[in-house]
Amino acid sequence: MPPGGGETSKHGRTGKEQSHPPAIRRCDESRPAPPFPAAASQEQKKQMQPAAAAASISEGPLVEILARLPYRSLCRFKCVSKQWRELCSDPKIVKRASQTLSGFFHNDPAVGSLRFSNLSGGRPLIDASLPFLRGRYQRIKLEQCSTSLLLCKCWKLESGQDKFDFVVCNPMTEQWTVLPPIEWLDQDGEDTEGSDLIYPFLVFDPAVPSHFVVFAPLLDLVDVVAIYSWETGQWTPSSGWEYTEYPAVTKECVFLNGMIHFLHLFGDEPFITVQDIEGSFSCKLMAPMEC
Image (cartoon, rainbow, N blue to C red; front, side, top):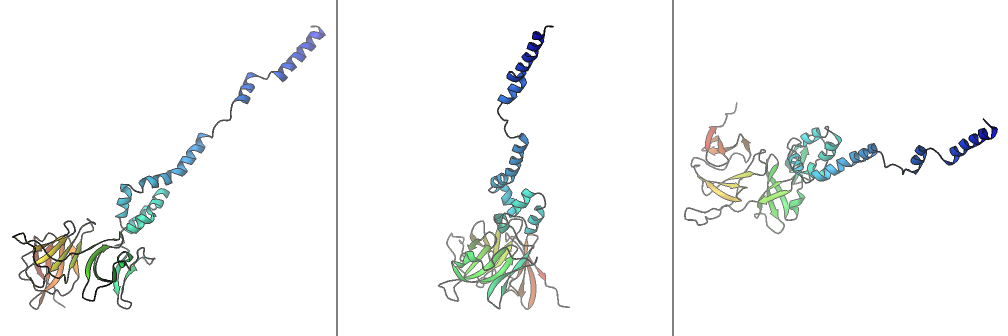
C-alpha cells in the first residue's frame, strides 16, 4: 500500500468523522425537545381532580343526601378519603346537617333567651338566637322541639304582649313558616270563625324531613281538634274527641311509630291520648299510677 494512499485514507477517515457525523447523531440533534412526560401530566390531573370533583358535585344530588344525614355520620365519612374529607367539611353541608345526636335546645330563664347545649362538648354549629327570625321578631320563646324542628312563640317588634305568632322553623336550614289562624271551610263552603291557637303540638317525622303536622285542641270546641299540614298549608278539623277535656297536663308530646302521644285530663284522671297524623285514628290509654 503506498504511503500516500495510507495517509490519505487515514486523513479521509478523520475528515469524515469531524465534518459528517453519523445520521443518528444528526437526527437526534435536530429533533425538538419532547413535551412533559405523561407521568407528570397524570400527577397534575390527580391534583386537579378533588377541586374539580367538588365543584361538579357541589350542586348535585350527593350534597343533598349528605346534608340530610346526622352530623355524626359526616364525621365518619371523612375517614373514607381526602376527597370525602373535603366534601364533608364543606360549610354548606355541615350547616344543613342534622344535629339531633349532638345536642338540644332549651329556654334559659336566667337570661330569657333560647340556648343550644352541645352534648359532644364542642362549639355549637348553629346560632341558638335564631338570627334569621330577628329581623321580624323581637322576642322568641321555645314552645316545643321535635327532632330538628322548633315550635316557637314569637313577638313582633311593634306588637304588645298579647300579640304573637307561632312559628315552626328549622335552625339548620333557616327555613320557617308562620302558622295561620285556625279556620276552614264548613259543609256549605263558607269559612268558619277563626279560633285562637293556644296549645299546639308539633309532630315531625325524621324519615320525612320536609313534612310536619301541628295538632291544636280548641277551647271553644272540645270535640274538635284542628290539624295543620305543611303540605297543604291549611287547617282541617278532626272530630271524635267528645270525651277529651282540655287543657292537657303538659304541653309536651311524643311521636312514636307514626302516632302522637300526649297527656290530657278526663275528669280528674290523666289519660294518654294516641292519635295518628291523618286524624283518622285515636285511642286513650290510662296513665300509669304513681308508685
